[in-house]
Image (cartoon, rainbow, N blue to C red; front, side):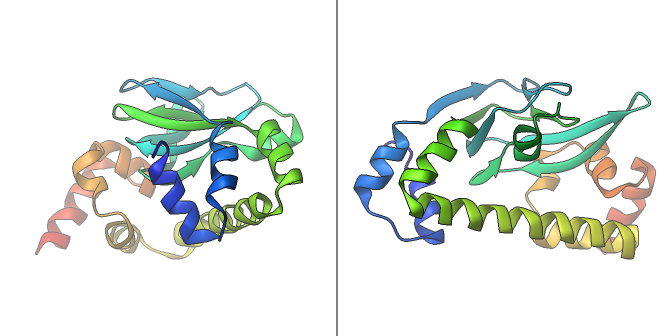
Length: 191
């Protein structure tokens, strides 16, 4: 079955008929990104949402010439800046593939039309949006209330595979610490 991974992720979220998925899948395009290729650029209005079938994507922003990693997306994750699309404002986020990546992509406008004709799609969108909001809340709480070692431990509990897939300086960036501090934390963590 084409788009099998997306089918299984959506089946965990909501109930739907295979015919509905077939209809939805006709709206999808497959996008391949090379390592270090940018999917969404800063300064442009986001128009698409994606489902990450294979690979790894980093979201980051740049302020005063410095990069700040805000999120890592791995297989079976949804991505796209819906707020930029909805408000018609340029995105401040850059989405870049850290590995060869395959996305299933649909324009937000097409997805919204699909939601209007198939209520089950709206239900899935709400579930995904709620999951994203929870992740943002957890990340903000973590940055405000946890020390760097606690943030590292939580990251390892939730996404341990990142250690082998992401350069350490990007993990340090994501945690809001210097790479040297991450090295010390990792040594203590390994003991």
